[in-house]
Amino acid sequence: MVNGGIQVIEGPAGSALHDTVTNGGVEVVFHFSQYSTLNNGTEVVWSGAYSTNNLINGFGFELVLGSSYSDQINSGGAQFVVSGGRVSFEHINSGGVQLTPGGFDSEVAVEDQIFAGGGVIVSAGGEDAFSDIFGTEIILSGGNVLGTIIERGGT
Image (tube, rainbow, N blue to C red; front, side):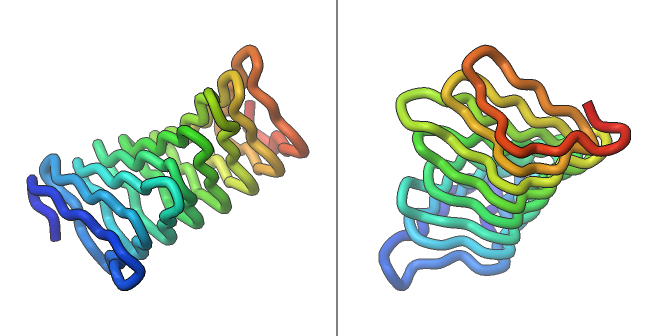
């Protein structure tokens, strides 16, 4: 548990399993993170690292420079995919937000599910592919969408 402190996960043997990051705590992952919960905490998934099956709750924040799979972004939670980061099979629930801002390398979101009240913003250089949108997706100038389905109630 990281409660207002900093935890760094690195090296081939370094992994974070079932961690809880709270009260402004920060977890920096250079290798692997699974089943972590972010409550008013931050997880940074560094380039070459990956995280999976994490919960991002109220005021939780995940910064993805590596890869992230099957996370849940709940009300007040946010996921920011930057600098070549890739996310797949994410669930963005009501009040959760995913941002793929683009930039030097392409950022890609693949096969995400955005539920009613959840949102995704894709800006220049970012890409969303094959997602199901029940909530809201905003594509800014230069953003790319491929094979995404706007489901009933989605925009």
